[in-house]
Each structure stands twice: as structure tokens, then as C-alpha cells.
Amino acid sequence: MEAKKSQEADLEKRKGSLRWLGILAAMSFVLVAFEWKTFDRTVADLGEYEGDLLEDEIVPMSIQQPPPPPPPPPQESTVLEIVEDDEEIEEELEMDDMEVDEDTEIEIIEEVEEEFVEEEIFTIVEDMPTFPGGEKAMFEYLSKNTKYPTLAKESGIQGVVYVTFVVEKDGSVSDVKVLRGIGGGCDEEAVRVVKSMPKWAPGKQRGKPVKVQYNLPYRFVLQ
Image 1 (cartoon, rainbow, N blue to C red):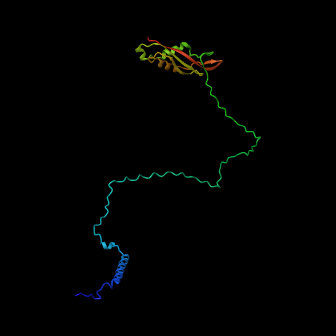
Image 2 (cartoon, rainbow, N blue to C red):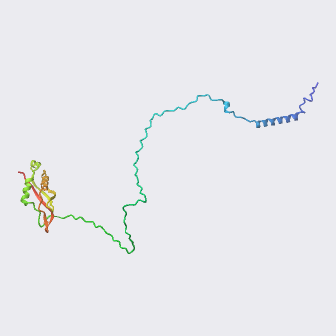
Image 3 (cartoon, helix red, strand yellow):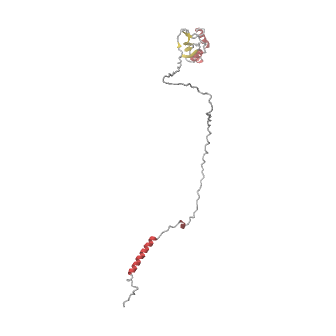
């Protein structure tokens, strides 16, 4: 016997409507997918952090800083004295009124420096200088005032020391030098005795006293 289908259960008749329903459902799903919004979870939803709060540790400085240098002493200030305009100045410079033109002659005064001319020292003059009492008195003076040096005695030194000196215009003796010595202390003794001489009679040239250089042989003899 052949089974008969109900007309209500026959899907061939509803095939077109079911197709449109599927298309509508698919489009609705696509629209819902585009319109769906996502929300981020807030920090409050994550809960609170209950860890220990670490306080910053303050490390004391172990190195002591040197004290600042003392301030420099105050500098002395210069006090300026202010003179009022009304105050009269006691000393006033007097200036002569001068009119200078092209024809005015200006006199220039030049200061002439005096040249120092060293006096000439003569070696030979008309009147040679003389020791008081003459040449014999001079040698007696040398013999009387000479102390024979100990070193010269012990070494047996004797001989002639040639001494030169200048007899000034007033007769005094200056610039005593040894031209040739024998050593042993005799040179120094000769210079000492000549410097201690009294004033000579000065040399003269054309009747006027002049400086004269004099050479003297000074003899040392062991007795």
C-alpha cells in the first residue's frame, strides 16, 4: 500500500519561503556581528595591589664637607672730598694773555748740560811733588813705620815692591797701587805705609798745583 504524505508536511511547497528565511537569518547574523561592541575591562575590575609599600631609604652622608672659607676682610674705601662750586680756590694760576700769529717769534731756550771734564794727571811737571823734609826724610819715614811681615821673615822673602800713587793738588796721597810685588805680605805692608804718609808739597805746572802720579821703589831687606 503506498503511504501518502500530508500536504502540510510537504516541504517542496515551502522551499522558497525557507530559502528567504535562511537569507534573512544570515544577513541578521552579519549585521549583529558588525554592531557588536567590545568593552575593555577597567583597572577596578583587576582588583587592588595589596603588596607592601617600600619607603625610600635615606642614606646619611659619611663624608663631611669642609667649612666654607672665611669672607675676605673689607677693603678700605677711599673717601672723596667733594668741593662745592661756590667755594673759592685760594691759589689761582695767572696766565698772561698772548696772541700768537704767523709773525710771532717763539724763543726756545735749550738747557746746556755741563760736561764733566776729568782733571789731567801728570807724570812729569815743572815742579815735582816732594815729601816733607825731602827724599831722605821719606825713606826714614818708611823705615820707621814698616813692620816686616812674619811670613816674609819665615820664608826669607826680601826685595823691592814698586808702588804707584797720585799726589793730589792739596798734597794728599790717593789711588795707591802695587805695580810689581814680591809677596809674603810685603805688598800689602807697602800699600799701608804709603797711605799713612803725611801730605806732600803738591806738584805745580805753570805755577798752579796739579795732580801728579808718583812711582816709589819700596825696599824690604832682612837684617
